[in-house]
Image (tube, rainbow, N blue to C red):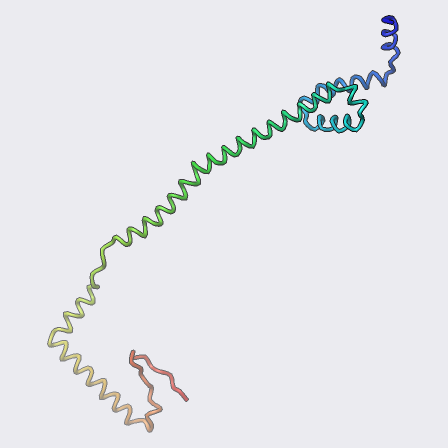
Length: 175
């Protein structure tokens, strides 16, 4: 019988030899390419006889998929760590700095001493206290009231006169 086996191999057609080479190529490529491994698994699960015949290839594909999944999970963990690290190193201090400067600015404004009275207001108070200014103010008030009386006598009716409200602004006519 051992004499028959070499004959069987020599009787393999060119197509069968290429098939065997392709299967051997799959053994090499499934370790590095996850997509090829997934395709080979799908094909082997669709044909149970082929799965039985190429069980080692099926197991290599499964192992390749597990290794790829583990790499992806490791990459996700590393990415998550890097994002958290960058967030902690850059985003958190910047947020704290902006919040601190905003609150610090408000605190600094509150800590400032209250303003003293305007120098012009103090000067007006001094001037109004003097006798000369008080006399000039009284003379001015008399002139204003006299001119208002003369204007009132010149017009025929008091409704035609412009009205002045308490703030000194002209009021609109009401018809």
